Image 1 (spheres, rainbow, N blue to C red):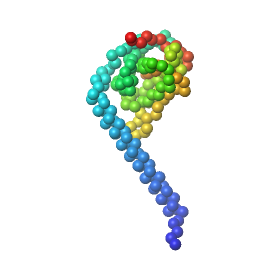
Image 2 (cartoon, rainbow, N blue to C red):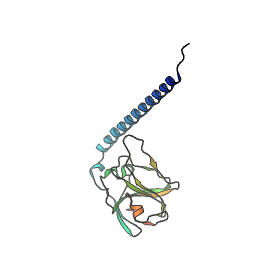
Image 3 (cartoon, helix red, strand yellow):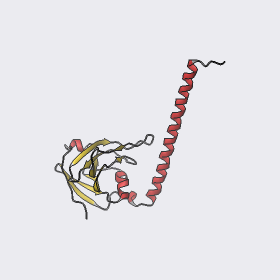
Length: 179
């Protein structure tokens, strides 16, 4: 009978773990490459990538500060969000209106710069804030961010905007959507 030493078993286990890690990394990389290829296909059929702003814009006032926000009205505009821009000025943002309050989940896929995400209730009061969210890494899964409460609007701003301007839960945000 052949006896395998404890050191051999530990070494085999470490090799197995390393192999599984390499496979997981390869699968993740393949998924990212595949999703990037699909995204490039989508952008060839859309003229959003070539523009710096969306067709609809509104003035947003929050804590006495005025922002000019692109309004993401269509599903395509909402899916791409701020990934259509290379940067964002401190006086700019993007507003995502929805027909009714619900749990709204956002991620940083294809983003090129960090942002704050501010969720608003139907009466346009802040219900949740995620600050200084970094663009997703190409090597790791892209996390989603969502409040525990329903929201009807989402406002994306430059990173640090919320803290710098005293934006907290309950802060009123004023804007009028285009008709």
